[in-house]
Length: 158
Image (cartoon, rainbow, N blue to C red; front, side, top):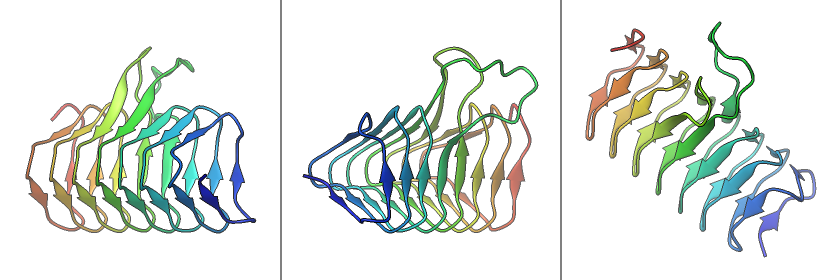
């Protein structure tokens, strides 16, 4: 049975593996799936249409599944998919994709440091490292094993 802090709000419709840990003041919405061994530290928010892999760690004030900042978005079902063994440090945001069934993706074993933003429809490859305050615009891509320096960004469609 997941270990859920008494101050956390977790929807009974959310799917949590048996060994998930949900810390103080976290919020987990209905259409969320959290993989085995994943830890939400505190004040983490997982909005609808978020799926995480196994053995992830999300630090304070991570927000996953915010609506895309895109004029073309019409409320369609789209997802955030986080791979296995991903670490998201404090204040990371990852937005849903634009387009029915589309996904914003963070690949396995990636590390996103404090304040990183991953925009709609972006893809972060496996084992990527994004240093503090990196910003990825919509439809951008970061390759497997890439390292991005702090406070750098990628424009949309790059």
